[in-house]
Image: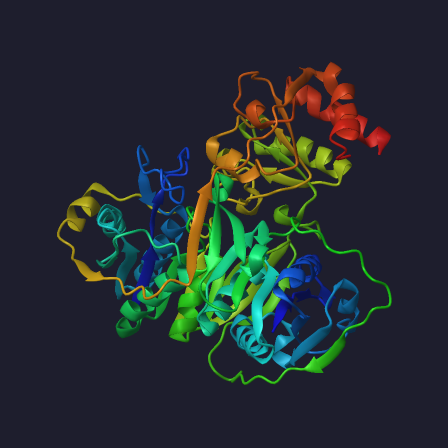
Length: 323
Length: 250
């Protein structure tokens, strides 16, 4: 019996969602029993032993040349094999673009239920219950599992990554799995970085979003400057994405991304219900809007009523001064 | 080439959520049901592929209650050729069960491409597409932002954190669609008239035993009331003080 955590890697680095999942696995091992095992899919074992610092006792390495890039079909077979080999009662991974693609495939292979994008797991009384947002956060559901292993993906930045226990190392063992890589499959031929290395909205600590109040795409330079000063990522409302002012990947809300940053700054956003759904789990919300009756002020911790074309440049300047 | 588009009827994104008396479901009173917004991109892309090939058939498939037929007529009005309605009594909350029911209905059609929205905006699970592909044993790319058909294969781009993955995919395959892939068409009057004569085949959905059980549906905890720190640029020092000293987020 064990808890299995999938190790997500990109460009040879373990992504932070993995450490968050290991931390949660270690916490749950108290109630569900351990040990905590990790499974990595890759072409080499570089850096895997160090996962011991985050709580993994053992790392199973599914080694394959094809795993130099993400391969959903092949990695699902490997993770399912690891779940069986370790008698896992719970399989965890991050609710990242990789985890959201991989976990359903593993669940389908194992024939078990999967709770996506969880914000809390509770193992009180030895029975696992997952809490997760639905309708972009307008409500939360609690799910119980009728099959074993239970599977869950964890929303990035919600579960704390444990402080590394320096010097603790995990044993790395090869994982046996059978995968016919010559079968027809989707082949990753490359990646592009469109955001210049900035974190994705879903993984950002601070987000500055602009809405229709920006009056035009050219004025988003004000939002970008404020975001730069704060070390933040730029977001947008549906209205401005639909108008073609910003790319779709920037949209926050029910048909965009659901975000929970430490600080969310809404600029010129009135606060349509589908936008509020996507950002109201942020720890602190600031709204800047000239309309004092805008619905955004109802969810904001701090509201500033004023003309954004005056306020935002002055705020940017003030932030630069103290940072 | 026969293409399948899996669609789902969901509450409108403008819906204000009220929890039903059972404490486990959405109170349906006053809720408008629509075609899942991400599925619109799936329908549109299937129609574009059919138009490009100048031949083929687009079959819409849904798992849902009796009300789902309104949505299927809408998809037929957009241009799908026929529909299959896998009927259920209650809205299933278990993606694997839905994927199994879909797989069973879709397998005999031997589609060249199966399209789905990347997620349904009600349960936000993002599971059925990759599950269905796994059950069908087909290559799968989720969250497709760009699609180009070239012969018996497709070149696609998929959204990942901070960029895109580029993939080559042999057909037959399964794709889930993201916003921005295309601009979905509206049904024309001609399309609406034509849709009335198109076939909707009804079958019971074979969902099997549930793998997940919803214990509760709850509203999010209310946020602590906030305050207006002031007006105009004069309020900036107080805003920054509050963010540093009260909220401790800067």
